[in-house]
Image 1 (cartoon, rainbow, N blue to C red):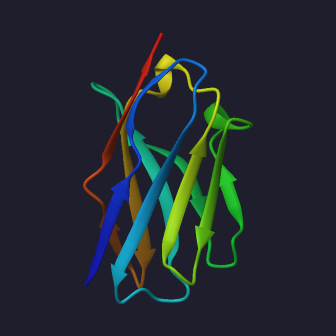
Image 2 (image 1 turned 90 degrees about the horizontal axis):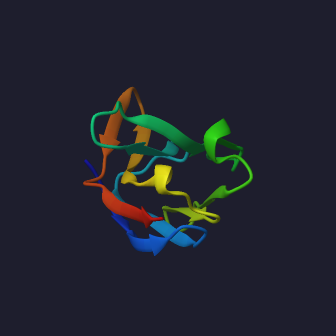
Amino acid sequence: QVQLVESGGGLVQSGGSLRLSCAAFGDIQSFAVMSWFRQSPGKQRELVAFATPRRNTTVADSVQGRFTISRDTARNTMYLDMTSLKPEDTAVYYCNLKQMSKEYWGEGTQVTVSS
């Protein structure tokens, strides 16, 4: 079993920065892929960024140049550094882990960007 715990969300002004963390607990395989998703009210959940075990990373076009994903495989922790935040970044951010054909989700952390 795997448990994901997000932290670091909050209220920030437009142009500000936040760092989200996701700690993974349980039977984490070396080949697990970890990702950040977000969901705004009335919208579908969307992929923000993902990191492979070899630390290859990809971020969505909408956050390119502003968000950076990183991963500490030794600590089973993933981060999302968000800069130049915009009101449209307001959402619940979810941590996701995929391994052995299974998928796990965290509870989510709220990020609110005021204009």
